[in-house]
Amino acid sequence: MDFINCNLAPKTGIFEIQTYIEETEKNTLLYEEKNFDKRMEAIDFIEFQVIDHIEGLLRKTTQPDKLILLKYSIEKIKSQLEEININLFQKLRANIRIGRYTGKELKNLINEYVDFNLDYNEHQEEIGYDNLDIFINGLSPLQTMPEQTKDLEPEMVYYQKTPARVVFELVDKSHFMKEDVFFDLGSGLGQVAILVNLLTGITAKGVEFEPAFCNYARDCAAELNLRNVTFINTDARKADYSEGTIFFMFTPFKGEILQEVLEILRKESLLRKIKIITYGPCTAQVALQSWLDFAVPKDDNIYKLGVFTSF
Ligand SMILES: C[S@@+](CC[C@H](N)C(=O)[O-])C[C@H]1O[C@@H](n2cnc3c(N)ncnc32)[C@H](O)[C@@H]1O
Picture 1 (cartoon, rainbow, N blue to C red):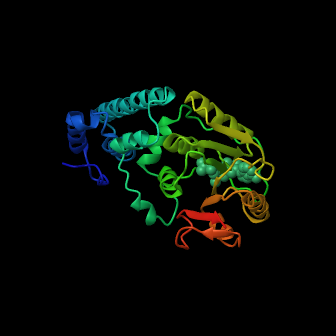
Picture 2: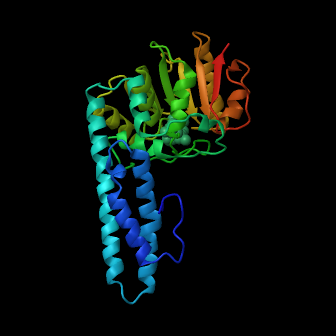
Picture 3: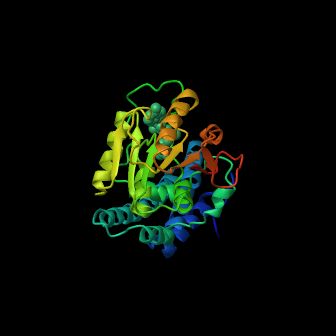
């Protein structure tokens, strides 16, 4: 019986749950390190279907003993599966620290664990996260998000992560040269700058208003021993962009702040050609700048990357 990818029917009883547990225990594929996608499906199914279902049954029964044992067994399987991921990520992080994976090697390696079809982005009409995000989160040496310590101004946008799939697409579409310097404006916890550096080897910098996020990003880069990734804790209106050639924005701010930052970038573009890559609602405002050319066919879907080059 294939339980995964279906919802447990309300009438699923102890016998079926027992069968699922036995089948999962015997499914050696789930315990092979490489089968990350399948393992994540199983972990999700256990957490959101099986355990939830057992808890529902427990609320209704006066004879809970058998169900309590089943819950214990399935939680144990879930921990074993999670342990495989924890060990996998520890190993990968150690290899990143010693510079073992660079650029294409890292991409190929990730591809061995997670389905990587970037065409999927073409059809996304909203922000979507998937197993690739879970995998990339696993590479992060820090797992607890810090609290915001400063109030944002009304035009500043709260932290939300760019989906990892979009960062891979960004790398694909940007045709980075080794002398490029990448900036993420409003870099949050630093994932975009770190991933761009890991996938391309180019210098990457993040500019972030919130000191706690900036410190977190710095600590991640230091733990991974990434010397060409730096984070600057300042308002994007005050940062020094003199080295930058490629600027990414996942709508970090809007309105006048965005216009002010675009004006700073326009001045930089008088000194050298620059590229601006946008994701989310800010794309519409960037598309209005007469000094920028839309480098990819114009598209109204704001959750498709906008790629602009200066004239
Ligand atoms: C939508 S999040 C993007 C986070 C990051 N780029 C990523 O994709 O993981 C926007 C970020 O911009 C930051 N931000 C907002 N206004 C800013 C400003 N004026 N200067 C620098 N950072 C700013 C916020 O604190 C937040 O972390």
